[in-house]
Length: 590
Image 1: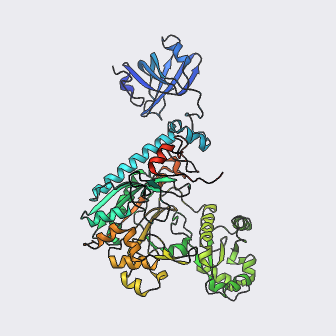
Image 2: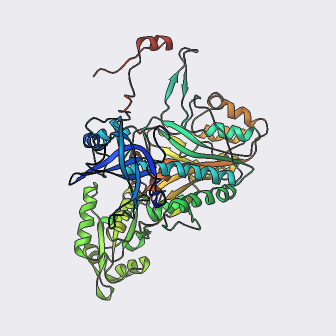
């Protein structure tokens, strides 16, 4: 017999009754039933009930074992007594009657329990992550993550993509975040950068004559942590294709992502035909470029109904042509209590309040706004929004560029409070036609709004003859349930177009050649039209596992301060290491 096990803890069945077996694992739970000990023995594969009674030669040692001790158990497989089977366990019809126990690894007193799903402080969970990972839910999430990545690989290969690995030590690239820098010992005073994304390399792969590339790519960005973004590193399903237009990328990617969601959605509905929503439309209807389409509410502009009206606050605002009034419908929300609650919520968000109209019987408008603008305007708003008796509408006014984020949050709040959101589904959509440039208020100049390597719609002609802030890009995102889960674009593969695009953002040709020399040179020697995207593996897994924090699906994450408190990183370098790298540390005074 094998030194440690003849079976795993998830393998025994009623067909094994009468045979001997050897199991090894962790003592998940120990119960004393009137002198008879029950040990739930757990390993990676499952759990088996072990029974030890006073007649067993293993009983004395069994009395000494504690939770999370690692033991080997020899014994006979037998049926559980009638009425004690556990239908939720694959091994639930049998138990192992122990005849011999060996302690393989005793455990100290536990800083957090493995049995049960008790909430514990994050610092404790991360410091003892090896214990946290033994817990059933987290262990399952990590295994689901691996299965999702396997499914992505299989589906990508089925679409004709080939997997490549791109370098980790590379040059700095403008991806919108700070680089992690790695000092070079061989070239003193110079630094490598960890890749924020394999953007330039995957485009160079297309320049090199390969046709369809993908990888599960590690990416590194020195940015502040958030619940939906891990500090330091993350993984993405990265892909690129040659001789394609936007529709070709959509046709290749959509079945991969849909298929993965359907495979792991556990029966929840998944969007079959993804809508294409222009960025500008998404911002006006949903107040965000990553809309949660499980929420059926759509905002509308209702400025005309307030222009010159008796509600002077809005009427005066609308004298400025930049200002607008937007309405958020609230079906079934036409009670004073709910409207006042929404108004209080808005004040808690730093707003002066949230104006509203309620509709009573006979579709009669009620509330301060209705009284000020009169019945005709109130009725016109009701008809435009498709509302009726018992409904309400909420209003946000000012410059949309400044209030759009709040309006989107209000839409979300109304939808959730009125229980209009179906949380048990996955709603996917393409967000298209992103602006190529935006105005940087900090730097007082035009800058790239998304990916600087995208193709502007209209090409070189648009760059030469159009107001930069009106140019759209062949750039697109995938939104799912309020998260951006992928982003991509058709690339700018013409050197003269690339130079002009960067020139508008304040980079001269010499800078372009210096910072993107490899790609700039490659474009001189026959560049195919190409495009692609990258999907966030971590966010997709988070959605499919039904959690809201990426730490619940990442095996060894950092904490909110970007520290690995399990391994003690970041840590100080030794004087010898610093000398070899020709570096002196100039840390700020504490």
